[in-house]
Image: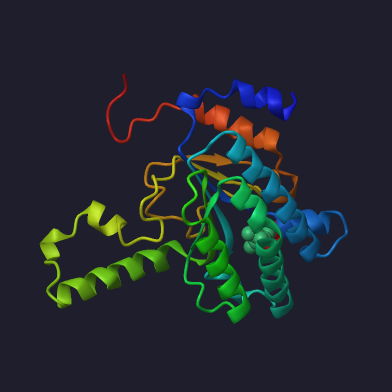
Length: 246
Ligand code: FPP
């Protein structure tokens, strides 16, 4: 079925407010075609563009993608360097179109270890889109769920130490306000491409009650049709949030 027809099938009332994607399998996809891993990442960017367009068309509230983990620095220098160039090029090429589509771009993670050029591109793109009211599009880069939780705990510990709040004031809501995703809904649907069945330190707090969707499809071959299929599948799930059936 064509993407436009599939889009019409989506019942907006059953759509996840926040979808997160672990974009895995770029390297394997390229290797299977006899290409370098870098070609897989380049193809992944093209897929990401299509997925974001679909989210914009669906008026999704939030979309978060895992672009680079705190552990990905361990990869060979050439691959890390390639990914950095790709981020830089992506921000330069896509930011005006994102802005025209009313996308509100945000980065989750540390970002201070990125080059000054990338840091300034991140700052200018997020500044440009800060008042946009469409899809909240989060790119997790130099991001780790444990790291995010530790940073939040440190911020709260400092507030307690300075007397601004007391330890008893710390509730889940107060804690959430210190996370990188402050102001965004929890993740409803977590999609992982590439055939593995794990969370890999992604959005550990925000996925507490997320529905999970794992697919063997490597990210470069993940289509808007399969993305919409995952959303339709989500619409059939019985979510109980720890309550009882019925
Ligand atoms: C995981 O596949 C993918 C990554 C670590 C990078 C994801 C990056 C992109 C999709 C493109 C760049 C993104 C932006 C925002 C410009 P893998 O390399 O681990 O693949 P493998 O599991 O087959 O080895």
